[in-house]
Length: 378
Ligand code: ASP
Ligand code: ASP
Image 1: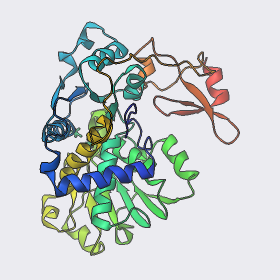
Image 2: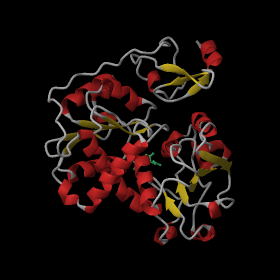
Image 3: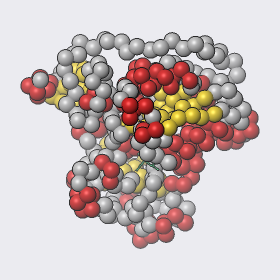
Image 4: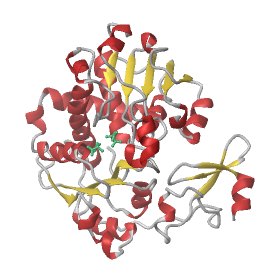
């Protein structure tokens, strides 16, 4: 059902497609045996250009529980990247060997760029501080399972909202549900980035408030989504040490919360939730990690089209070439964390956006910049 598609951003699937993936995840949880050989003979490639344990293991476990196999690398030092190979060529090679690829990369927009050259579905498993859509599917599935709904929710997002890619993806995904009220709880230094704020500001389905204190709003929340301060994205250790203990959820704070509020966390946790909270029935983060594997199983099954009656794609794949359909190929993205800064051969993909087309937006990293400002930078 999702053949020839990719999952790069959390809104690449429609709300209905997401619901179908969740229904499939429900079925896999209910009868795992029925799905235990469904991906026999299929190969999932894991391309981890940035270290990860849980996301990679979650995908590997998902594929082996479906009867398929995995190959790949967990460390860029062991790939040809160190020899200077381009991202485009790496994904072309992987496309020849595997049926589906999962990519994590420290640079924003890398999976998007790879998808243009890939003959197989590419799943973004986290690109720098930008997006992490499979975590979002996991988060939504957990909310749906625990709360029974994805509409009409008051959610607190707490911690490093600037660098936390799971938060950016979750906000984007939530914008498609109704009556969502968000409390964005962070130190002023770690507020959501401009493109996320802009999205929130123009989004009719979401009401939001930025606050610095968790105590101020915890009593209103149906869901508290805690995140770790993303040490690896700070330019100095000093700055990290100043902010690292900004929020600590402990038993005392939990007493102020509703009896049915749930606590989520994408993990790994550092010290932002004390261990004493783990035994509180409202703590759902380990359950969330478990659900993550089943959601990924449903995703792989959907991408590979292996459910009964779906036709198999040809064994010899057509190599993809990026189409040059942009008018602004001589306008370049100014974001120093964008993949276009690392891969000189990638075509620029800036397009105009905003009510009166007053912004340029980069298709890879989503950064938005005023048209005149960017033209002056040229
Ligand atoms: N970055 C974290 C880790 O390495 C979590 C993840 O992989 O999603 O464990
Ligand atoms: N595991 C999540 C990620 O990879 C959250 C985190 O690392 O803090 O983004």
